[in-house]
Length: 525
Ligand code: UN1
Image (cartoon, rainbow, N blue to C red; front, side, top):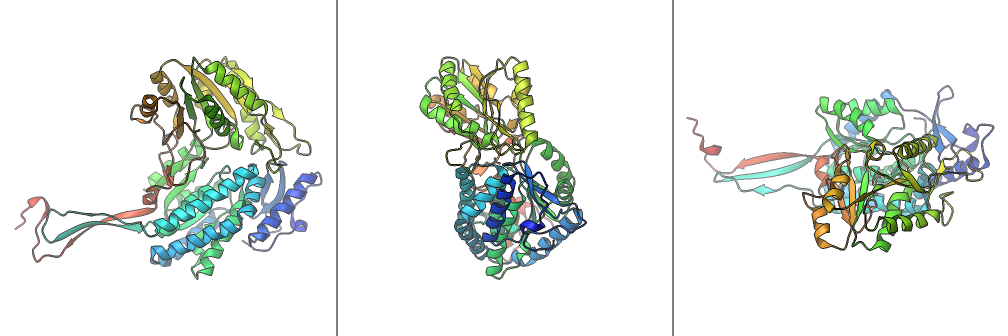
């Protein structure tokens, strides 16, 4: 890629461009400059990759498009850099991640601004996303002095039986638009302390925040005198993603996105015996029991269902409410939804920003129509919202729909703010409804009854990777392992012992005796 700082006159500005788009471009370029990032410029004859902001729905600028050849070169550079990086002591690698955390802290507002411009998140949530990056850096620094194996008793005298953990090699990270930078950092901070190199293909919808984040890591690496090759960024679309997934030098593919994407990636990686870490769709439900603290539940539900305009993997999409409290709960939620400020995510007080694009809005409208055809009743929101000066943006009012049953539309993930409400009479029935979807990411129960809470968390309860009590389905901390079961893909990123997926384990037996006893008492001559 040619690396020249891109200025306004080098960008493709359509004649019909809105004043808002010009402002967004200026803001984005200024933030990138503060981040020390070079914005690559496409060749004159190249059809560049458009950077579109969901705030205006228009193109801010174009970037060079990486295809299979660029991915091949990036993986080559990463594989080469890995041969040095793997032998750097893990605590020293941790110092690079520590520096990345410091740079992220220093540039928190700059990166958050790019997240808002590209993913449409309100400022507080965008800052929270960068905080999540800082948190995982802290976590990974601690990990850099802890990754290690066990020693087990050997059955043979004078023998030691132990495990050693080694870096895997090149990790391919494919991230989604909705957490454009945090998910990269979960993978990268941990992979780097584990001794791996990372090739990152961000969503084609969030290229600038990727450029900004990668620039900070490059700085941390070069300041410490390490080859920047361990961190590679490829800005491309499907062709680039396919090349990365198929490349036999990529030891682990960590991909976040739709269930459909996962179903395409998984067989390719499996066929070459590569490792997979998938974080795919969620269809997260909360159960509201008769004993629930309804004030607390209402607040938790509104954040998880309407926050991030319903565009988190962990967004609450289903509410399963006891029949004795359902009318009360729905009335409280409808009141809260009525007052939700929808609009420019940069504005103070806005709680719901735009959907990522018009396609997302169409899918929301279509799902609402299907729900109504299934007998659903829209009790709040659901309308398309016009924001002055942003005609190309896709704003909607988050919706609540009471459903007579868990029909197909409810069992699918529509990546938009629709909360389907179902009722139950026994806890067993509620848990069965909660589990009766293809996905298994996040779940929660609102109850003051310890028996109900414990049953929900037991083996007979939620089948999800995340199960919470008296808290919504979204907004997990980085200290726990993050991921889910069934069609969500089974991977675990972020905290706890997720690091093990970024390393390979060797079992070592050392004989320090003068004899050669065989295991299992075998006698061989
Ligand atoms: C995602 O939507 O892909 O738990 C990640 C949460 C965030 C991460 C979401 N910490 O909602």
